[in-house]
Structure formats: C-alpha cells, structure tokens
Image (cartoon, rainbow, N blue to C red; front, side, top):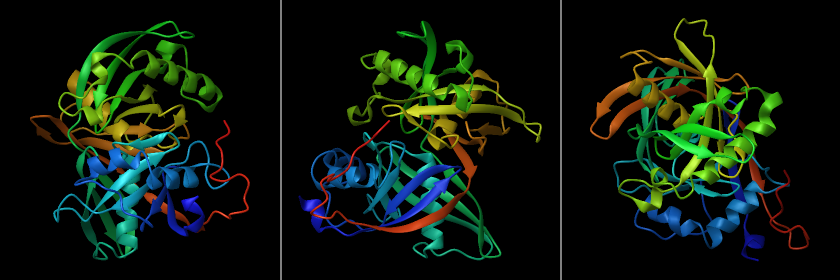
Length: 336
C-alpha cells in the first residue's frame, strides 16, 4: 500500500471547538487546472487514501475535518485548499477557512503586522474566499471568513422523513447547499441531549432531498448536492443583537461543533432575505457547545450577499503520521 511509504506532517487547529487538520505539504500531486477540478480528482487515488488515513481511527475520528494545501487557481490567491471529512471532499468550509487564516499568519506564510488586518486569500472548490486576520500586539485577535455570495435557493420545500414526519425546509447556498429549519419543527432542541436525534433527522432530511431540483447548483454540476442540514432556534445574547443557536449535521451524520462558518453565512442570507436581520445588523450565532461566531452582510452582489463570519482558531497540535507495514488495521476504521 502506497500509504506505507508516507510521512505526513500536520498542524492541527480548532475553530470554536471544531477540528481542522492542515496538511501543508502533500507527498504527491493532484491533477487539475483549478481547485474545483482537483477536488473531483481527489475523490480517487492517493488523495483519498491519505484522507482516510488521517480521518479514520486511530489517527482521527468520525467527526474529523481537515484540508490539503494545494496551489491556487492563479497568483491572485495565496494558496488553495481541498477540504475533507470522513465521507469525502467538501466544496466549502468556513471554520476551516478561519483556521487557515490563523495558520497562514502564525506560520509566516502570509506576513502580517503586529497591529492591523491582513487578508489571506484562498481558492476553495466553490470559489475564492478570504480570511481577514486581525492582529493586536503580535497576537491574533480574530479572523473573519469572507465567503462567496450566499443566497436563498428555495423556500418552503416539503420533505417526508421516516421518524420526524413531514417537515418544511429552506435550501440555502453559501459555497455548499444546506437545508435549514427550526429544530422545534422536528420536535427537537439544540442541546447535547438531543444530539443522536438531531443526527438522524439531518440524515433523513438530506436523503429526502437527494433527487430534488433544489439540490442542484444552477450552473455547476460539480457543486450539486445537499451538504448538510442546519437546525436553528432562538438564543439570548448579552450584546442585545439578534441571536440564534444552531447545529449543522453534514456529510453522513457528522456534527459541527462550531456554529459552522458557511452555515452561518447562509443563515445570515436567509435572515437578510426575510427581513429578520436588519440592514447593517449582526447575528450572534451559537453552536451546540455554546461557542460563538458573529456575522453580518458585508456587501451585496448580483449572486447574493457577501457575508463576513468572525471567530478565531487556535493551534492544538503538530503531528507526524505514518502507517506501519505490520499494522493489521491498515488505513483504520470509523466507529460511530
């Protein structure tokens, strides 16, 4: 197995509790003229083998997330990234973009002043995004993920689930397609005690939308498919601004511990569209573990609204991974 010859160095971060494992240097090249094409090609061959090595137990876990650093589409970006999770490669990842911005500045890949804002420009499969890294006295105070334009793709779609009855969801775009609905509509609360039911409801909603026209990107088939389900509810904010709590169930039952970066962007787009988030106002967006992002509309574009999602990311480890040729577990396993 090719993986037995690899020594893989990673830098691990967390963003609001959600892991992000960065692979700065790959032991192989991934074919493709741009990051979107590389994502397609990564689904087979050595890139997918490496993904499984780093996600699967005993090196990872069922809710692991990470990214491979690849060349950008053109010199206008600092680098590109392929986002991955236990089930494959995703088109967008806001919490990962926040982590990448912090990593790029901390590592010196993108020079930054001791005080100021530095833009880290990153090509992702869904387009070009930026991480605005704010430094103060040499420390990173915050990172704002500036997403591709987000918009409401469809409102009030009826889905029938096995265990939660008939539900009504909105489909939202923000680098990936999400189904979105109030948690109470499924008889649930966004609390760890309801986590298993939230996972099952998210899976059933995603499955029910698999062949729906709203699960298709309007112009790029390689971006088709419902990526995740966002359950939301009202929350209290000490700042006196609009506050919601959410949990995003993505891929095949993965749970975002953070408020979800691209998920936050689409919730802002939906609230802006409905008029619930007034022009210029911020959304305090809390996760199932009570971590927080703050987000607002930065500008309006023909395709939708450009949302900025502010949070921070912190290094947790630097690792070297190998696969012993005598290891009978090979690439490992996922146990959930």
